[in-house]
Image (cartoon, rainbow, N blue to C red; front, top):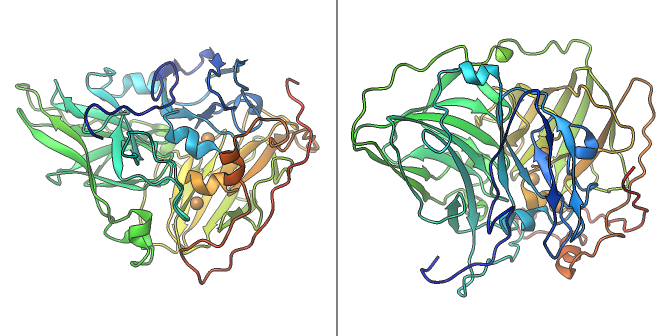
Length: 469
Ligand code: C2O
Ligand code: CU
Ligand code: CU
């Protein structure tokens, strides 16, 4: 961005991004979301365990000028979650325009963990995103073939070329990949080691020493890094050495060769060496769930489809009994990248096969990166809330794929209960802009990967939306 040029953006309670919301396990939260935008939006609480009607997915539209007030009780462990829009077909552009914020949860375990915890001092949120700018400063919202909104400029917490002057020798960063399509391979400019201490759904049990970490759109990681007195080091996004197993010739199209300086960090002028990091941060990680006899479901991701279907807001794809562990086998059948996100829950990764790419798979997760051909076996459970009427979503969180229909819906019911969806397509009721309708038009053959067949399904635009039940 050039100095003196301004960029129109969207935000929550401000020009871009939104306030960090913070709550504690056991708290009842009531959010009031007023839509002052010209377009319909929704506000989804990503990673949150909550009733489906409060989830903020495509079936909880907030029309311009109206207010939505979901309420739920926080019933999960401490974690770094986030919130963002989820209107079907338009999630990517709304995030890209600036709508995203963090939602941090605390509990007794996170209080007891000896980790940096002074928000804004040694506990620092980093929302990492990419954008493209037009010469006049406005956001370039042109979708590129297959990869949608992939930017050439990174912003951290909404600004370009940010700097952080640390006042302590040890800093915890809570990092969100808030990009629509870009993968980040994060490291420090001098190659220094650091520790992973948290994944999407909570703290890891033991800090894991690493030199880099992969983060796909929607994923979070909490890291701890130590600084020397008068240190200067840069948090960078660097080229993926393995191209995430994407064909070398295609890697530049996905931005896998790109490198960015994300954040310049300076150390304090003084301070003693930090103590050893604590172990035993999160005992919930010690054993994988027992999934003997568990119901198994498969999710094949290919083109903009899951199990051969594109998202249809009037169709329920899976009906899940609450409280039972299930095994979800998710396969990336493409020769390009996807990830897989599930609403309402945090899962464990039982295995990740047919890939040598090792993304963040330990710990509680709600989103997992899948290299071409990779198969993830997940232990998933939905507790507490049942609702035969309102669905949750599972989808690729690369938002261009999601907006094109790489998403499905499930309801969580009591044993034997029948689903009773009374849900519309979303397209009949809302004043979508022409651009939105263009984005949800049938897929044309993408320019990349011509050897893959590309089915051309159509979107159903019929249905009745009944809200406020
Ligand atoms: Cu972060 Cu269904 O979304
Ligand atoms: Cu979500
Ligand atoms: Cu995808």
